[in-house]
Length: 381
Image 1 (cartoon, rainbow, N blue to C red):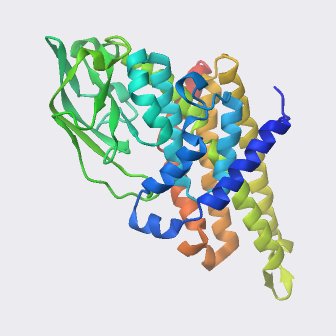
Image 2: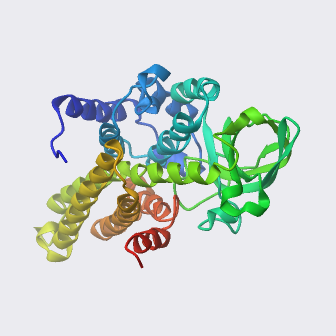
């Protein structure tokens, strides 16, 4: 592994931070309080090229390698205080676009990829159901072949972008008695009859990205909507999750860096009894621990990205990265609250929002407990 970034990569990093500071200076507090998603902000990111960073140039993307994209997402997390936006972009890059590129037909890629890159189309990744979160393949949604189409029935929940998505990758059982080997994936347009997007559901954090349910009621889709082959849903899901777990939290590195700098500034300039609070071990030790979490998380993130880029197995590293980064930001956000005291508890400073957003990261894409199960299994336990 190389630990030095090239001048070109560093210049790109700085350009992303500058973009965030110049173009993404909107009222995050107000959007968070209202639970509002901004299409204008989304299009600004698309115009800058964010939504095409890892997509090959032949499909209209920027064609950056995986390590570079992880580095740029770190820059995004540092420059943009809206953690929800960074997460939302990650879902498109690592779940939607990755699945399309690796399993989609030329027709499917040409239909959905250009719109995804330019911000005209937003996709949802519909796997989770009530009672089948961690047990993803315990789903009840079905897609039964009827002539030259499939008839889909079921309901998906906790789906990012579900209320406003233009299309969804929907997982359903095409062979209900075949277990996980009978699961298939479909590309379903939101305006397809029988596809119903339910209202936005309120949540603890990540409030500026909508989440909700998708109801499928005799939703008929052509066989050409199959993503990959019949019964390939398990492989597609596992493949996508490997990418998402290993890379979707890269912005957390930047968020932790931003949080650390904020706490150092406060510790140097706020005084109690004429002494900077950073001179007290109760504060300085918290900051030292924040630095340790940042550096260990950064090393693990880039090892995972490097393994992905070089085609090496990273199942273990992806699980470790997902678990460690989410827990590191959660703990460091809690430490920042303690350092800032009452002011940190106020919404205008953004620290309490960081904490709420970070808690969500310990749940989505597989909970920390599930990541520990994966790690233990890979260790032969």
